Image 1 (tube, helix red, strand yellow):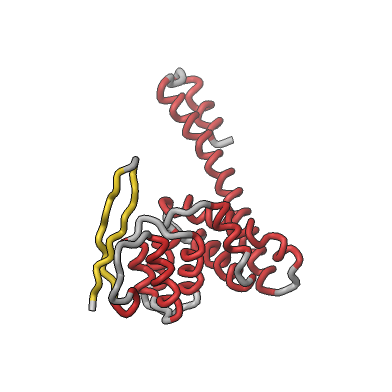
Image 2 (cartoon, rainbow, N blue to C red):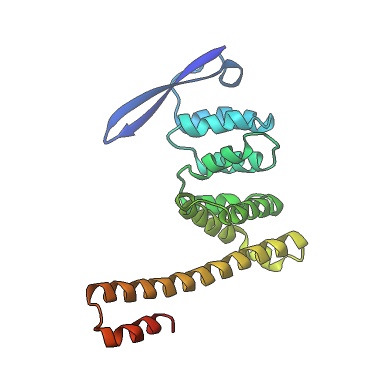
Length: 213
């Protein structure tokens, strides 16, 4: 049975009420007006216990905000699942707004192995992501590394060293790409200058040769 839940948020002192439908088995038959945090406290633990990735993903579309502790639970549960919508759900969850300092503190409380897997996923995703997703992933990578940097530095586990190596390789690749882009920008600037003020015929060949130096 589907139960409507009214979610009330406040904007400049004005209440904005939205109705969300959830399974009565999760919310109970006496569900009334609840905040996003109250809904998450009631629903997220049950969905995580069942590894219901589709249900967790739905929360990212119907709630205006998800507290960091529940968002961390959702991410780590989804990361360890074999759901056919795992990748899409992870992307949706990574896009949920959060406060970096709060999330950093939250991830410090989690098992190192779980956070290491999350960092590994974000690093791998960065290598194949589209431009629109890159800022989101970069912020997540910063938060995850900040949360466990000391533990990784002191760890002699293979998983931690593989992660740090992968992050280092990705960073080096970005530095190479940045240098290549800088060279390309210089060439484009030179071409733009030539088109704006073409050299006289005797100097034309010299100008073209200069572009290739």
